[in-house]
Image (cartoon, rainbow, N blue to C red; front, side, top):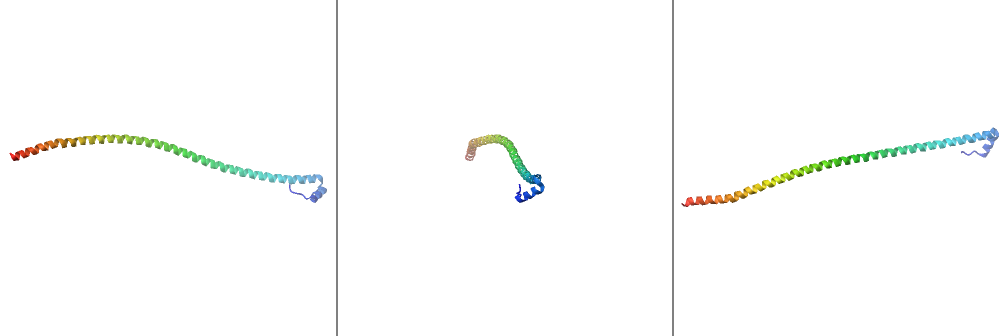
Length: 135
């Protein structure tokens, strides 16, 4: 409450009497109450704005966390697909290696046969040719 000098209060009391003084006190008290009410309302509005900002940040954070989980799900699915593809490629490579091994075995056998059998046949042909020339 605003201070009223004693002299002013005495003049008002003499002029208006005790009910006038009560009215003036009530009026100033009512003004103080109105100022306090306005301050409280401003504080409430500031708190509500702060709460709204916190809620907006929270929503954004939750949205980011959700997108992280969705990305992780996609990564897991992609990993499973990649792993199954790798298994297929591994199976195919094992088949190719097996076929190559068989082919090299057959080639080795053919070379060995040609070398061993061909040598004997060439030696016989050389002997026959030298016998004809000699005889």
